Amino acid sequence: MAEDFLPYGRQSIDQEDIEAVTDVLRGDWLTTGPAVSRFEADLAEHTGGTPAVAVTSGTAALHVAYAAAGVGPGDEVVVTPMTFVATAATAVLQGATVVFADVDAATANLAPDAAKAATSSRTKVIAAVDYAGHPAELGELAEVARSADALLLEDAAHSIGGTWCGHAVGALADLTTFSFFPTKNLTTGEGGAVATGSEDLLARARGFRNHGLVRDRSAQRFPDEGGWHQEVHEFGLNYRLPDVLCALGSSQLRRLAAFKERRARIHARYNEGFADLAGVRTPIQHEQADPMWHLYPLRVLEGRRRALFDHLRAIGIGVQVNYIPVYWHPVFADLGYQRGMCPNAEQFYAEELSLPLFPELTDAQVDRVIDEVRGFFGANSSA
Ligand SMILES: *Cc1c(COP(=O)(O)O)cnc(C)c1O
Image (cartoon, rainbow, N blue to C red; front, side):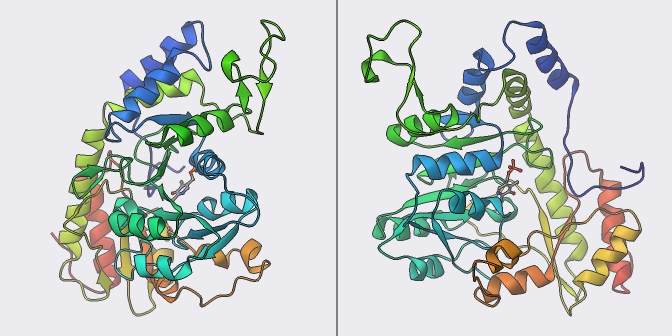
């Protein structure tokens, strides 16, 4: 990274984070020791008490969640197209058919009526994303899922620490998944978690994370095999998050509230900076939401998104576009998914530009971004 290049997102690591990691390195456990259960307990303090299972990435969390839900061949999974490809890809890898349902034009979150229209007797899971950190319509989506006899999965890769109708993200869906990638709201380098209030789903998630190994003798088919014995009843993978990274996660969680506050301030500063600018639209916020803002999704009108993207990148401002509609990826196009099926998502994609947003971004850097965007449109600087 060039020194004067401003990324769109980046981690914040302090001395306590470093000490938390080095303490583990000096100890007895590198993986699957006490830091894992501590991190899971710490996570539950941010999910309204919902138990969490730590895994190796947000993608692993989605895979674990679909596996726990029993998603397999013959099942359908209703997915928002306004997300990172993993939300859909992991369902396909489980053998399911993904059905994309369009988003709300304002929030870019899965629209409950579109989700309902996409359900069938085969629907096993409805997967929504809290886009940019703004929670989806979780109450209505839970109702849609219930009436379809399906589970609601909330991909909360953007939104840990947020609330909807006063309830913590993590306590609102049957299964909630998190990502701890460096650009997200807290980081373990690579990492993720699944939260669920269902004991059955929790046990299945834990099993899938660790090869499906059964060590509890009372649950084994051959309990008298010997003291070494463990057996597999269902296939799983190794998605275990090591102690080293769990210790970093626990340390980062202590600053989650501060991260949220700083992100909200930057978000508000952008909103003010663009309030009178024709040519763009600022993100909306529902009154039920107290978002953890992961992204600042500016909407660039008049077909000028690409030109603004190129301009900002050329002057060292690391903007991003989140996201290309998932079914535009060639892997889905090759399966027969056609462009045009979710017009709101496609319109949103055409206009969206994510501006730099991370806790250590300074007010001066935010103002520089605002001034450059205003300058691009020929407006005076905000100062
Ligand atoms: C980042 C992200 C993922 C994947 O998480 P990783 O930790 O990178 O595997 C999934 N869904 C959404 C919405 C994301 O933003």
